[in-house]
Length: 90
Image (cartoon, rainbow, N blue to C red):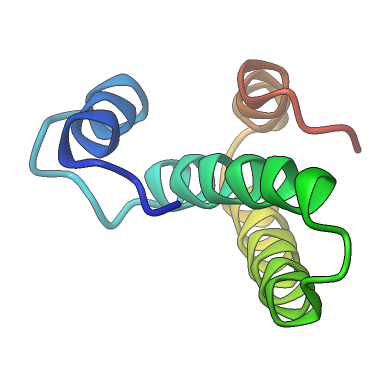
């Protein structure tokens, strides 16, 4: 369920300005989105995994807070582009 090194590096390269830019809001949101997608697929197969469900809800909340921060610090067009690229509905 965890992200592989290759997949994580790919996400960082795509959303970060450089390969060492792992702490930017864009990269953190993209990584959380990928983990949320993986956990969602897991929960479709295992609907009674309540510990996983709690973790998923915590990740969704964390991503929501990061998106609110990102929205308030950048231009609205960048925010909309990020949401469209990640397939997040808002």
